Image (tube, rainbow over the protein chains, first blue to last red):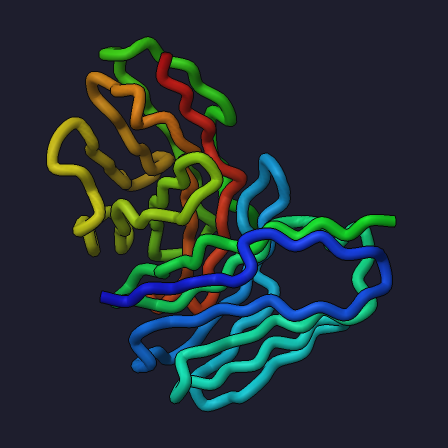
Length: 110
Length: 114
């Protein structure tokens, strides 16, 4: 059974810091991994999708890496801003559904 | 539409009452997924549809929960005889394929059972 874990569960940083969110999964036989953002009272917004053949994806200040063999992915946020405050979730396909991690609640203080 | 539309946004039910949630997927998307998020914890997969057919229902509780996606109607998730532990946010998502590569989530329906 696929299990997805995210560390840390919560993170508070001052504005401007670079930070790394971690995601690990137990079954490395995945064909992609997604990072989502969830704002309070809102649904999920897909940030980055990394195919299994890729090692990383970049979008603006976000960079996600994938190491299938070690069952790990990281989301790197450069020069964090208060608007980055949200919960970040990673998810991997399991059959035709997504298995989500528990999320990292990020607070960026001005 | 260009977004997954879920209604109602908030729903309060007394224990034992019925709750029905609706989801209009993005036009052209063949797959619809329902997820349950309890107390901001992990997302639990409930059920998926390919058009009006159940595609995967392995996450659906055996009792009290049912779902439908009928032609020309919003998809629905119904909970009979709600219990306190059914209180959660129910998210609907739609996709062009079953892999989740292009999946879009609605904003969720907040169910509170009192």
